[in-house]
Length: 166
Image (tube, rainbow, N blue to C red):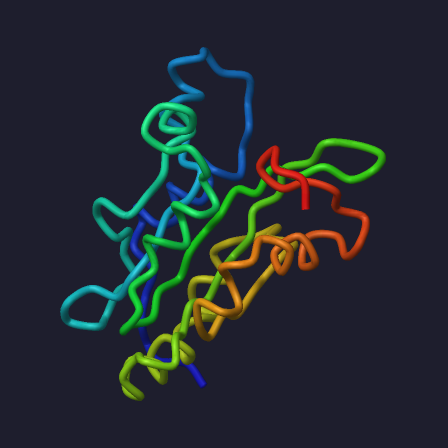
């Protein structure tokens, strides 16, 4: 069921900037987003970038020690969100980076919010071409343990996430 909600151009730009990892200067790399949250606009007609709820690559090691734990803390306990997380992980063979689309619908969110976010999810997913990993999360228990994300990324072959062994 479609909700008629549209996706703002800024959301698409953020996704494209995160998806394309062209060789950049170190300053450009620092400004690249590691994680970002999207929400519905106040009138519930558009999906927009949620101001202030992002982690930049340059923050890691500076103001952010553990980007994954920091991302989890950005999620509101009483409302839904969409998120993009640029996961860096290692398998026994190689280092990898993949974007993960997260649909956050916690138990404590109002029913109306859950319904509109669920029915608008396809609108944003259609704009995010090439996403390999999608994860619907319904509470902190599902997302706090990084091994759950590691499982989504590659099952039991993932040995570390964000440089931390599992």
